Every structure is written in C-alpha cells, then in structure tokens.
Length: 187
Image (cartoon, rainbow, N blue to C red; front, side):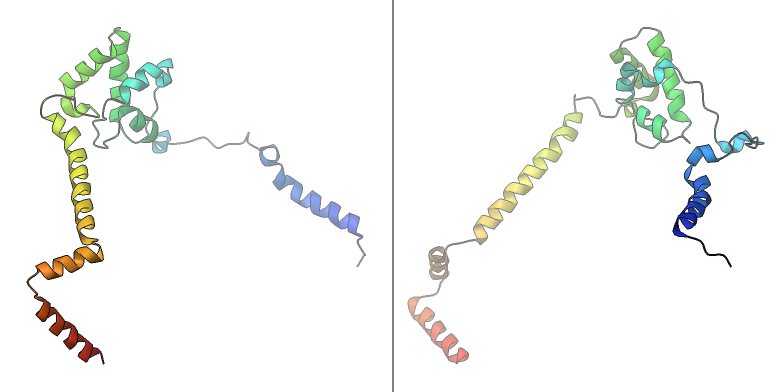
C-alpha cells in the first residue's frame, strides 16, 4: 500500500468529478436515438408565425373566451394548455380575420356572431348585464353597513346600558332587590 499525499489525493478527486461537472460539454449529444413514434410525443405544432406574439392579436385574444370549456381567454389557453385543440383553431380564425384588415371591434363582433355572447370574457355593459356589474358591489356595501350598525349597537357605554336597564321595566325597588339577591348568592 502506497502512501498518497494530500495534493495527489485532491488531484485524483478532481479528475474523478470533472466529467460530471462539465455539464453539456461532458455529454455526447451526437448519438441521440430517433423518435420512432412521433405521434406519442403530442399533437403536431403548426409553424410559428409573426402573429403568435403580435400585441394587436394578443389584445383581441384576451377579450375572447376559448370554447373548450376551460374559461380561459384564447391567448392564455393557447400558450399554457398544449392539449387544447380549440384555442389554436380560434387563433387561426382570428389571424384570418386580421388578414382581412378588420378592426378589433369587427373581429370581436364576428366571434360573437359565430359563437354567441359566451365568446366574450366579460358581458357587454348594457341592459340586464348591468346587474352583474353592480349587484356584487351593492351587496358587499349593504352587508358592511349592516355589520357596522350591529357592531355599533352592541358596544354601548355604561350610561347607555344603565338607561336601557331602567327602561327595560325594572323599578328602583326591583333593581335593589335584584342586587341584594345577587350579593347574597356571591357570598
């Protein structure tokens, strides 16, 4: 058995760890196996166009709901749920309408005409829809007012409490008898 000095020990340890520390440089990536069944890797993706990240299109997609039932807007659904087949199709429809030089309002009107009012992320602010916008705020405000009124009524000053007791039907003699009886029970 030969003795190893500290420098030799550290050199051997560094040489042993070096292939693992190198990251991608230490791996051979040229011998990757072919993918025999690409259909198992997921649905095929369409080609990426300039419309994928166009702010105008994203703005319209944010105002329209995906029809797959996820309750997300088209942009969020198409960029996060890669199993959804509806949102890419809706995106292609929207791009086709943009290529016809329609305005944002005309595109939204076309989607509402085709899919109904449920295609919108928020209902239009007209008619009975105002109830959906105003009723929650009114209900929360009224609940706060009633709760505040109840809390204020519960917190009375001692003078108000004495006034309420005396107005409650107890005469001075009855109140004295009640105090005497309570004192007798406490001792």
